[in-house]
Amino acid sequence: MSRRRLIRPATVLAIAAMLVAGAIAVPTRSASAATVDTNAWYVLVSRHSGKAFEVYDRSTADGGRIVQWARNDGAWQQWQFVDSGGGYYRLRSRNSGKVVDILNSSNADGAEIVQWTDQGGTDQQFRLADSDGGHVRLINRQSNKALDVWEWSTADGGRISQYADQGGANQQWQLVRVGSVGGGDPTTPPGPTANPTPSTTPGVPPAAYPAPQRVTGDVGVHDPTIIRRPTGGYLLAHTGDNVALKTSTDRVAFRNAGAVFPSGAPWTTTYTGGSRNLWAPDISFHNNRYYLYYSASTFGSNRSAIFLATSSTGASGSWTDQGLVIESRTSDNFNAIDPNLVVDDQGRWWLSFGSFWSGLKMVALDPATGKRSDSTIRSIAGRNGGAIEAPTVFKRGNYYYLYVSFDRCCQGASSTYRVMVGRSTSVTGPFVDRNGTALTSGGGTQVLASHGDIHGPGHQTVLPDTDGDALVYHYYANNGASLLGINRIGYDSAGWPFVY
Image (cartoon, rainbow, N blue to C red; front, side, top):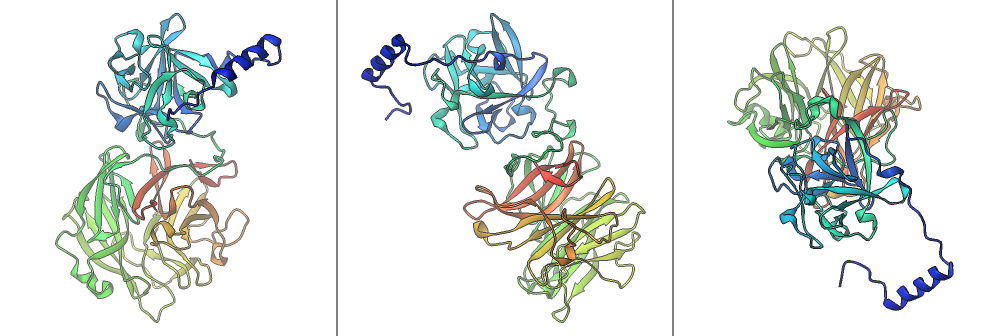
């Protein structure tokens, strides 16, 4: 069957008769939406799917495909309308400098939309036709067909085609202005380092949890921790045999970078039952060295330990283990896993950690060694023995924010993990949620939870970057795979974080 709903001839005749008789009022479309600023960058959002018009996989090549993808406001989703005269425009990609083009200059329904070097041809020119609700249709000058989400797809990667203008929601686009052309070279991707405009009104949380921003390559991770290297690019560590490493130049494409201890870590096997799998690392850079705190344990046991390793480069095999930082035994009321280092405003070092049992703890460290400086163990959050783990303490403005994960991890698509937060003016607490409930009494304000095909997001860390703060976490796909999730963090008028 055709993907289009056809109107029977008899129905057409009946409608025509009613029009003649004046029985049907034909709506007029406002011209206000079809006005563009040729000095602006726009993101084009499909009315049908809510996804953005983008250059697939950040291609800069002639013939690079145009698809739809969850909005992230990257340069590959930003477009300039270049005046071609007569009410027509060429759509220039900020990522590549190329323009939207009909593949092979086709006039056929279903012809694929690509990017190509700007040649000024009529197959590269589009006019804006208004639809209701502030949406427009983009009509090609050569074929007189509309840009169209093929087969009414709602999936990331759904291709963009041309098709006879029928005014459907899959042919309607919202033009969202995201910046000025004068703000930078249009052929240079802004990326994480160039402060792309947020995809939500500043200070206003979105109406629903967003999809994770697009990441590509080797993105199968669990319990991620990430830093921006002082030399540029990113280094990510996560749970895996001998602690797994990944790198990225742009916070989008990730590749495998080996293991922290490629020859093994036999000093940990007392706690792992002989397994090489080491958990929940925390990576940071201080004193011209990379610091990595990591956990050794077995599932469901609090016979656990946290160790420290350091490196001058962060590369696989370059790490030196510095020994035990803290351990827990089955007779203890805490669990020594899930470490996170924070340095307070006075330069003091603190390590938070913990999972289940009596909740999350914090100990003071000696900055000279990265090891404990005293025997005090402080409580910072708990749920009376319930499911809480993965603390992250992060300073912004006047507050230290304590992010934690509630509920069950590691159940694939059945996982119920969710990200919660509290805050305090002191690094050691007390931390309270938006309602004033202490996190030591089970409090917590929810930041992110399962939605759609995103299951059990959690074990979060906060990455301060040049485009703002980002929440980095893992989640489970429908097939149970554990994947890397990244969203930017906004702050509302009261200073409480949200993701977008």
